[in-house]
Image 1 (cartoon, helix red, strand yellow):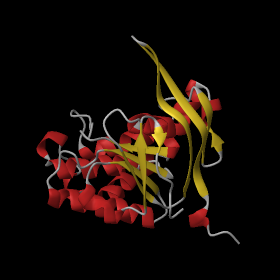
Image 2 (image 1 turned 30 degrees about the vertical axis):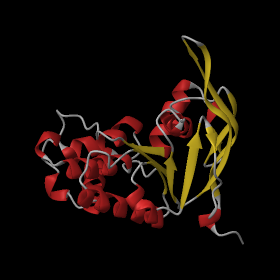
Image 3 (image 1 turned 120 degrees about the vertical axis):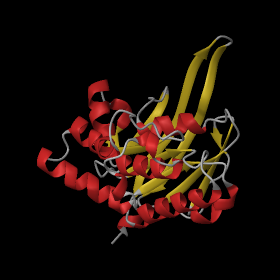
Length: 234
């Protein structure tokens, strides 16, 4: 019997993404094929403009491929309508940004509850308790009733991770999540991502933090829209 941890959760087949720019057509991704198993902590690396963010956007359903197919957890994402895509993304992909992007007029607790409200994924009476449990998981439960501006950068990033986990998505995507944090705080955040992968989440992180390479089970290097290495531990 196949080990569930080794099932391919994310599969991209010959994905190309072309944008129209002033000089003509630009291929941000060029014939990319990729398979990522469940429960992995994966890094995406590459120079600025190499296609890293486009790859994240394709996996998260923010962008659709110009050519090729994208299967996430058995769903052909590129075939979904815009309304279907919004609902699918809300329940299947949690996104963590470099600059946190917490809503400043909501408390930390309300920020974490927001995805549950948007997707109606949990009964209303359960949402507060679930949000508090997630904040406890990321060790900032005591900050629940505070506003984002009163928290440190590391605490805000923990809140953003709790928010990304709100609907229990199988995939967590993070774009330079420690780019604005000191090394001590960054280490704590990477340890948190590692624990999420160990619990069964597939965590994909765009990062330039070479000091934290030991946390990753694999690294995907991108250059000029093409993957230039293979996953060796899949």
